Image (cartoon, rainbow, N blue to C red; front, side):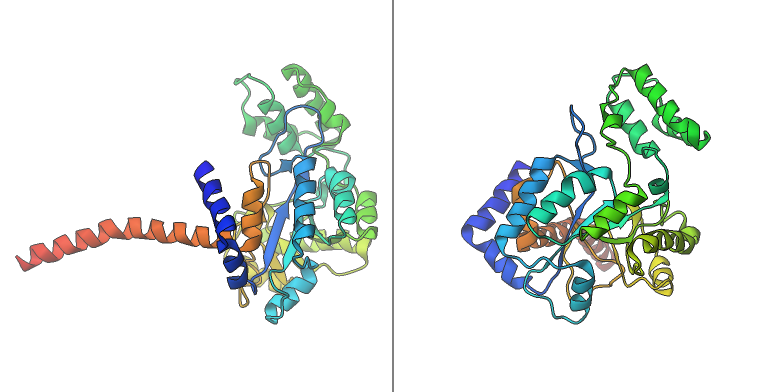
Length: 338
């Protein structure tokens, strides 16, 4: 990582970043966030929850950069028309954690930056934390290794809904973990009335499936999940949601056709990259920001430098893979010649 940071810093100082920005001017940048860590104590979730101060710093840097920040719908339309302002950026937020409203939206408002929330909605009608994430946190906060993650999640999720919170609290007490996470609603998603408030304050609400399904493994459920998710959001916005984010980046080759049939115009992944004109609108790439991402990496993504670094790494990897194959082929030819 230090070597990568040194390389990116050198690119910026030498002027290569400016060249990268010019070369990638027509390509759309899409930032991806989840929630913020608002519970006292050590943070949890490398990409899932970043600290509030770095998030504000990112938005401040973005605003001061002068790069145009577009709403998702406008950006997708202008990408398709090859009519983007140079180095355009879109801000997206996944899931709909409570901190989106309490901490992220005020920052976006302060810097007058539009953003899209891909909201998953099953938990929005239930006063429950997201079970699998809460269990993972509780187990991460203890040195005990006699409690397995997956069976514990399955056991709690199998309980009647009105018993699940008590089961989580019992687990936390058994492990000696403070309930500050529960007091802060760290692992709660926005309730319906909170989504109403977020939308009224300008946050664009789009599709993320109703139950945050694994698209790659449950592709047969995708259309129904879109319908439920859209119906929930339409009660709030009065508008038809037409943009989608693959939950956890899970993808299936049949998904684009199903999404198109459902009236979805674009879909985003969690794979890093820029989006050139002509990019498949159902496989848009994003930069996933998080706790372990340094400011120099954030700046490098926006400038396009990170794109060329990734391209160079891919080329080097291909060369490493191909070299032994070529050597083997040459040996075979030599043997045949002999």
